[in-house]
Image (cartoon, rainbow, N blue to C red; front, side):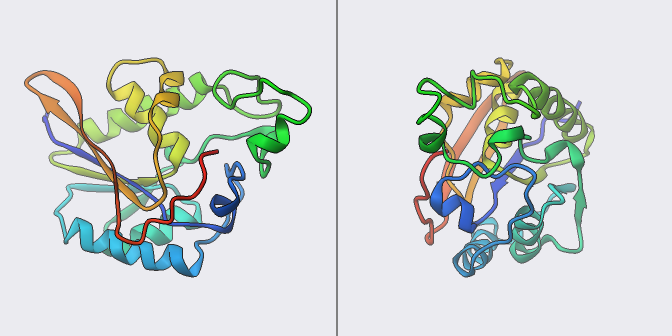
Length: 199
């Protein structure tokens, strides 16, 4: 098994990320700022050579990957789609808590959607694919998914992703210390980071 880094890139800003709306499978495009952020992420990555580049097929992640300079290399992967929030898609936590005061995406049932463990199972498949690559891997995806993938990388339950806040237009790195999987860098924001609210 190759001990190569996995570089996680969260997509740039969208209209729904500005307002803190849960954006799962709704195919929301980047804002103008989001596109500028994607360009800036490309500058951060500085043409880094990846043996494999995976992207969520949703346009906000896919365009981020393209604008960051990996259009010729990116491969869509359904396993790294964002969490399916079911009936809570498009709603903010504050709005949901008006009727369900203790609601949390991490601990409450998501009617018509996925459990955190189901997202974790997809993350495990993505990790297996990354580990099979001959060198470093780039993954362009979504906030909640990448938090869960990181928790699973470290051998933690999927719901432990709640302890890892992740902004839009950020780069993080999963790697190794000897045989141990570690978090090498987290939430490194591009210079155009917008500090969108946490969902």
